[in-house]
Image (cartoon, rainbow, N blue to C red):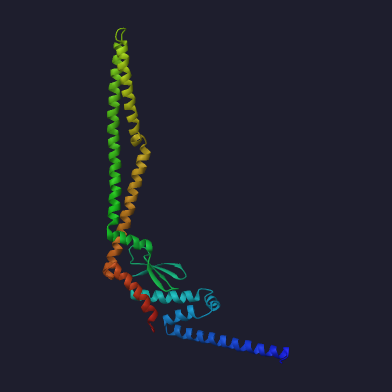
Length: 278
């Protein structure tokens, strides 16, 4: 039977042996990573760094974004080499790069590269606008707003006309009522009172109808603010559509179609990961 001291020595030897194996594996991984980075085998670099190295090594080696910068620089270089008409517009984070299609002053970021995946996506809001343009949705929305604008003006014109007509009718009934009041005597009082009562009911009905039309013309400020808001919405949609149309023309010229562009973006990632010695 081994003494406690002997058991301690045996246990420590086992720890050293295990640690040696772990360190040996780690050194092998780091050596393979270095070689992959030297020959720019990006598929191997991603595989070793993200799937083989311990998290602690990943974190320590990227403390100041050293690996983030490495991945983004390689991805950016190859992306612009493949698509020289693209322009880097913004680096949203250390690993997210946003690109625009050209140098026109209204160009905006439309594509985003994620260096950690890696992946290439069309920004969702931009893609939505491109689809709306292709499907004619912008035209429908703009026409609907213009119809609202025209209906709004038409309602105001109709309201003014109705109010003028109702005021004229009220005035006529009031005139008839005054004439009846003047003609009232001892012999015809009951009949005149009945006729006046009928006129009062008719005047009240006309006044009620008059009140219903007043909101359409009562507030000049409110009317103008609504018209301005409609005009601004139409202008904003027209600008969105114009930008999307310009971008789609570039896409059709450079790629053939939006669908072909999306396919090429995915193929680019595969080529980036599988190509060596760039």
